[in-house]
Amino acid sequence: MLAHTCTGLGYGELTWVPWLQQWGYATFVVDSFGGRGIGSVCSDLWQLLPFQRVPDLYGALRILGTHPKIDASKAFLMGFSHGAIASGNAATMWVKDLYADRP
Image (spheres, rainbow, N blue to C red):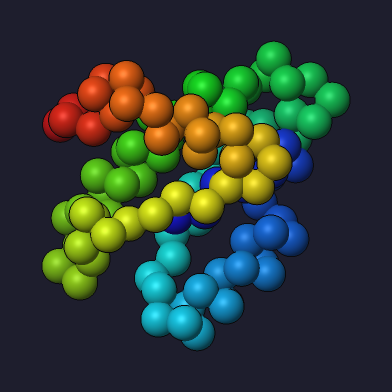
């Protein structure tokens, strides 16, 4: 899974997705802005804090886990800038305990 920067979907994903796929990894880009009508948070981070993206990331993992060709236990999260902060937040044990077992 890939988590985008404060500018939304763009260069990071366009660069990494083809490489990851070439190396044999399935890719899933999580767009935390599009569904919320946000274009960018770079100049106003309060629109959506990185921690507020954590449910999006765990939701994406739940969706991936339903695919017959995906082993969710081997999934990894790669974030860029704002998405890297969200990824770090998602990696904490207390957040895992909070979101990982939700239906």
